[in-house]
Image (cartoon, rainbow, N blue to C red; front, side):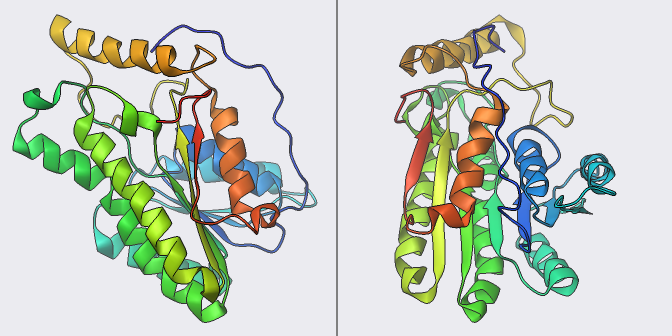
Length: 279
């Protein structure tokens, strides 16, 4: 992970912005998903946390400890062990959320992430398929599972987390996956806008984060793989007008905004969040 200057801007909480809303966050055990879930809860939302890892139980416990005895703070519902690469897991979290809250007001699709870093010709077919399954299918399946209840209610918001890596190097299958997320966002938004549902996305750039609790893949091994990964880091910083990686808070803020009623006239948009890099 690069050592670069990052913003020290404080996290600004808007109390009550999600009061009375059920906001599902996928990939909530760490990184951007965890920070988004914490922010939504701090602003009053009830937050089902969906993840394949049981680590999400710890995140929920921390949120609920803060919420106990605190006015205006939402509670988290941990839903671990759900691998969203399988369509059945998406149907399962929807069923649980409807049973618990009677609705899903907002769905934030955060599952995904590049597994390998290498030039395209160095991928084998199995790796290509795994990258696509990891970073496109969970968003496709989750939207498909949650959409009917939003359409029935005549309202709802879906926020997809894409990536500026659609314009990056050494991650072609991942870039293709996130390009699919962008297309899904725009096409679905067009279909359902007049039915009361908004569909939007952010495209995060390079983001500094603590070491992952659960690894996506084996990580770069050997000098050649390290060099391929370093090329991604160098290109990411170079492509940013600000010449730095962002922070988790800087990525969470636009996601939370787009999920809120303050963004009620925004749909079909993919917002790059990469210090000026448009992806």
